[in-house]
Image 1 (cartoon, rainbow, N blue to C red):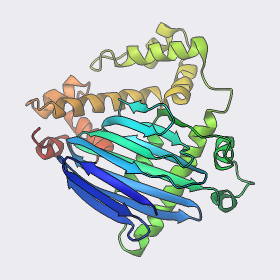
Image 2: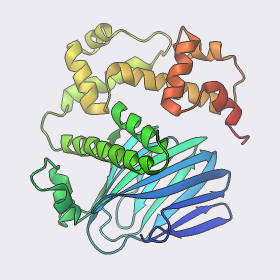
Image 3: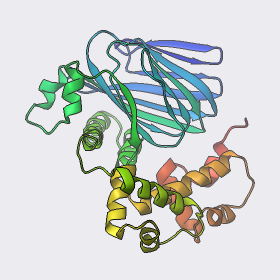
Image 4: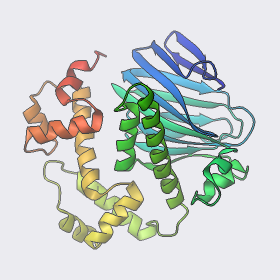
Amino acid sequence: MHNWLFASGQCHVAHDFARRERIDFAGGGVSAYMEEIDVMRGVFLYKIDADGVGQFQLHKDDPPGQRLILGCLHGGTGTLAVDGHTDQVWREDGWFYSLAPGGRPISYDIHSRPHWRVTAFRIEEEALDALGRENDVPRMVYDTLEGRIADVAMTGSLATRMRRVMGELLQPAYVGGMRRLYQQSKALELLAYQFDAIGGFDRSGRPQGRELARLREARERLVADLRDPPSLDALAAAVGLPPKRLNAGFRAAFGTTVFDYLRDARLDSARELLDQGLDMPLKLLAWQVGYSQPSNFITAFRRRFGVSPGAYRRKKPDV
């Protein structure tokens, strides 16, 4: 459906998903594929998986009508632009965004690291009937599809469960006919998590004011020294919050628990060191980011990025 334009270096490729559900493209040091999956009436899933280090752009002329786009960005940095709206920039790995283009052109300007991934849903007006008004669909979905919202926002950090399902969608456990059924089931699971995430932004229980400031201080203290981070109790005491409230606040504000946030920060730091081309043994790299056992580090890295740190280092192109 509707033309997309991929541009990288001297490579420009246009594609219409009404004719073929997948496109493969390469250029400017990046090779990638993009796929559209018809999940249910009025709901489409897009998957993008890119390898390489470089810059590329995706452009789309949004047709007239109301639709909501919900996406998950994993890896790399970049800018999301819609005509008439303030550009949204993501500089950290793992962001969830919402987009109501309202018929305006959309552009993604991406600075890819060795592995950049996206899953995104396009939800059309007709999807309200398909989803059923009796379901607990966030008010924002109705307001967008009924024309009361036309906006774009980087909504927040990806929750661990969203990262997990995103990885399962990009690397399906099945082939053949079962592959499509598996992808549809995982797509609906991820969509439920995304609805829950944007619905949470409408509820008054979100951390605000002084408590949000304490949570941000706790986040900074947590990752200040990845080799010797504070315990949950010590961190809670340092910012003046009960441990249970600190953990619950982390989940509400940052989409993950304190423990999972620390783990992701350690693994992101390890990947950045590998991206820098530092030639150090994996045992030393594991210690550098806070793992006393290299085997635990390798297992965690593989679960997070889909490849072992050794394979990631060998795969990384020269830049």
